[in-house]
Image 1: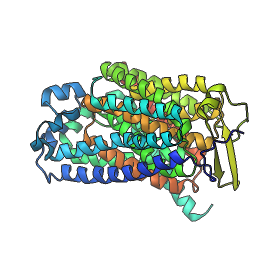
Image 2: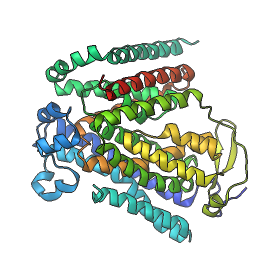
Image 3: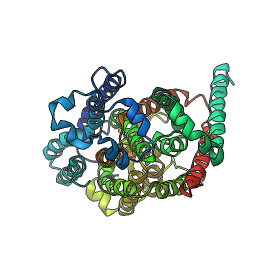
Length: 142
Length: 321
């Protein structure tokens, strides 16, 4: 049986421990933001960019049709103006963005750990994985 | 049977009957289409949100008891039940799968059950194809996606009926690629109270299949645990517990990649996505507590029936019936 020299006595990889720690913290923050953001949105504690009734009246349309009809902001267009960031629906959307970004944080922390272990194959895999996620998050492919 | 078990069983059977009856009702297009426009216009948004939360909660319980991810049940069933366009349901479904995987990830990694070295290469190919799948799925007309979704769901139901996951694995020689990547591991089995060591084989074939699974997951906005686990377990020789846990890790990366496509296409609406995530996650926690108290084989059969009905409904919608 092949045993990796970097595995601890419990059989857990050092890099895996790093990934798990970042994942735990990132997901806790993410879920707190998700819940908080949603309550800010539906209780309308901040003004909304599009009223909830209007969204509900059009949620039978496809995403493309709804965007065309309501001119809903998507992607990083929220950051066009600071006033936009102070909208309740935008705040709730950003909490979802954060969740979708959480794995990038985890992978970013694994790269130095893999380099310390001189594991260049996994350094490369992690690097390419981050690149794939960043390309997706940039919106270039859309 | 203890009184508590009996009560749990009654609750479960009651929920299953209610869900099943509603799905059967939805299967009769003449009735459901006639009722839909009135319902959508007259029902306040917050009632739909409460219903979505409650429905997702029940799905969360069933998904854990049946040993499948919430994402795979969410998209086909909610698309036949709620007035939202399929685009938004797929966007929410991806986030449901992603959130479940993120929340369970850290403890499973610390126990050595989710393995980063096993998951990362599969996630790399899977995330690229899941982006392609999401782009393809959002570019297709909704009726074609419904049709393909119906076929996929029927296929998943068949796979669930026939698949026998293997708790015991055959220790075959690791292949050259897995040796080069150093993929092997040890975990402590709390049932046998022993360390279990494992290694893998057929890694190149596994990578090809993960690419295919990623595409399907991205296209339909479903989690892909139903496919990841058999590939890890039956094809590559990964122990079942490691296969299930590492499937979540792969899902968290593939789901994140595809989720961005849905976000940029405007297919993720927090109004719909957040109650779905909250309901499924809360239901999953209850489901995990019930796991030792109910007959999971019966629940699995109920879920298969639910999937078949949802698949038929999706096929009918795809044909415009």
